[in-house]
Length: 172
Image 1 (cartoon, rainbow, N blue to C red):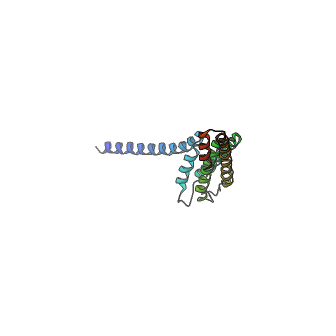
Image 2 (tube, rainbow, N blue to C red; image 1 turned 45 degrees about the vertical axis):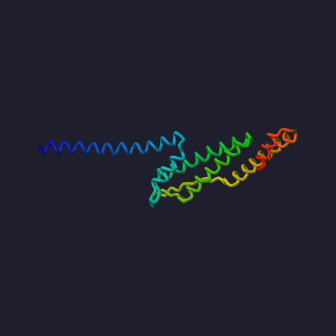
Image 3 (tube, rainbow, N blue to C red; image 1 turned 90 degrees about the vertical axis):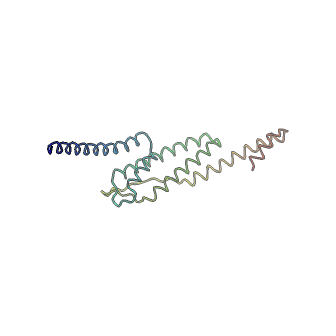
């Protein structure tokens, strides 16, 4: 009877250790998978939760934050550059949305700076001057809307009442 309890306890202990190891290894693979899949914002949030409020920050999470931030900022800035080339008013609106998202991400990260790991490694980040991008994009939106309004106004003066009403709405 006592031998059966001992075997059951050993089995339970082995299962607990095995489960712990599986969970620990799954956590490592999850962050690496997120990085590989390009889920940078999720990875940033996860890593920031892991280090939040801790005096000693694991190097793994400091490096993950640094790498994910660099990659998502590069992706967003590349997207902005591609949209600038098209020069359409809808694209300028998307540029504003992307730049605001970059700005929020940077502000969230600033609260963790300086970001130093428990082994002394200090992460470095390249911040973007988003206010300049937003200001330029908003000016482009206004210019495009003004041009569209003028085109509708000219059509309205030629007798097209719908174009005149549309011009009025554009200038409002």
